[in-house]
Image (cartoon, rainbow, N blue to C red; front, side, top):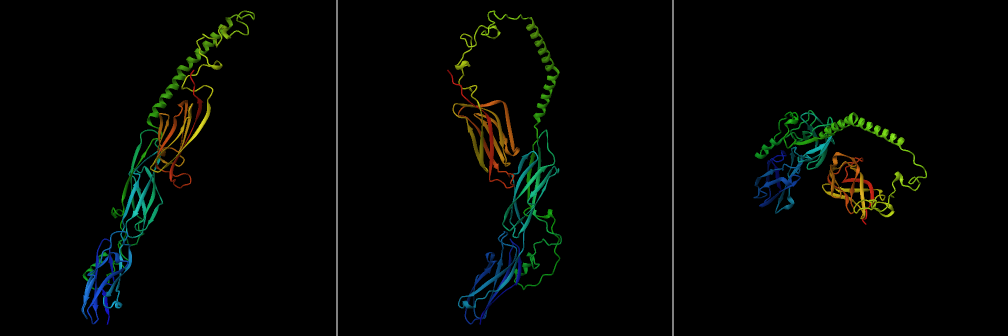
Length: 479
C-alpha cells in the first residue's frame, strides 16, 4: 500500500506576466485516513501555488487540486525550461512521500530602459553623449543604437557598436555626433536628433515570437487550466521576425538629443575686421604721407638752423666743459627747479605704486583638481609689500574636461570660459594687469564631467593648470 500523485500535464508553457494552471491528483491507497501536505519544489517554486495546500483522504479515495503558475514580468522569471515538482508528504506515513514532476517552459520577452545624458551639447564640430541601457527582459540580448537626424547634417558613431546584457543587467554606450562641416562665421546652428535603442535584429529565418524549445506558446496552457490530458500541438511554421518599426516602445525606446554647433568666429568679429581694414587703408592713403611730409620739413628746418648758428668760442662764458647742455645755467638737481628729488637724484616715489628699477620677472603655476559635479578654486597671492604686473596667462585643459573656469585678478573678473571649447588657451597684455599686494590671481573651476586624456581612459576628476608670468616689484614708499 502506498500514496500516488500525478500532474495533469507533463509539460506546459507560460508567459511572464500571464497565468497557467494544471491539476494534481492525489490518491490514498492506505488503509487509514491520511492527511497530505502539498509543497512546490524546484525553480518554479517562487511563483507557483497549490490550492488547497493540504488535503485529507479516506482509504481508497482521491482528490484533485489546482496548480497555478504566475511568473512575474521581470528579469527574475528567466526564459527557458525548468522542472516543476510537487512534494506530496503524508502526515501519518512520511516515509511514503512522493514528488510528481513536470517541465515548465517560460517564454522570453524583451524590454529595455534607456536614458541619454546630457540631452544637449555645444561645440564647434562634435558633441559626446552617454547612453545608459538596462535589460528589463527575461532573456539575454544584444543592444544596438540607431541614431537619426532629419537633414543628415550630423554623422554618428557608437562605442561599442553593440552591447551584450543579461536579464536585469545595465550597461553604457557612448555616442558621438559630428557635424559635416564647420561654421566659420554667423550664428550658431541647432541640430536635433533621435536615438533608437533596441535589440540587435535576429538573423533571417530565425523565429522571434517568443516560443519555447518545445515549440509551445502561451496559448497552449489553456488545456492545462481546464485540467484535460496533454495533447501534442500541431506543428505550425514559425513566423518571420517582426520588422524594426513593429517593436513596442518598451522594446525599442527612442531618445531625443540636440547638438548646438557654435561658429568659429563670432559675428561681431567681421565688423571689427572691416573697421581695422578701413583704418589701415586710411593710414596708408592719408596719415602716412602727411607724417612723412611733416618729418621731412622738420628735418630741413633743423639743418637750416644748425647751419645758421655761429660756433661758440672755446673760452667764452658758458662754453666750458662744466656748463650744462643747451646753455642752461641751472643744474638739473638744483633747488627751485620745480622737480622734487629723492635719494640719488631720482624723483620721490609715491605710495601704492611700483618702485621703478625693482621689478623682477616672476611666474607661478596654479593647479586646480576638481571632482565631478563639484567646484574648486586655486590662486596665487601677491606677497605683502609687492605689486604684480601680469603680462601673460596660459590655461591648460589637457584632459578635455567639461565645465566652466572663471579667472579673476584681484577684484576684477578677467574671463569666464567653457572648458569643452579649448585644450590650451593663452592671453597676453601689452599694458600689464596690476594686482596689488595681498590680493590674488584666482581660477575657479566647476567640473561638469571629467574628460579623456591621451591615454584613452576617462579621468576620475577634472584637472586644470594655469601659468601666469609678469613683473614682481616693490611698492613705492612715500616720504
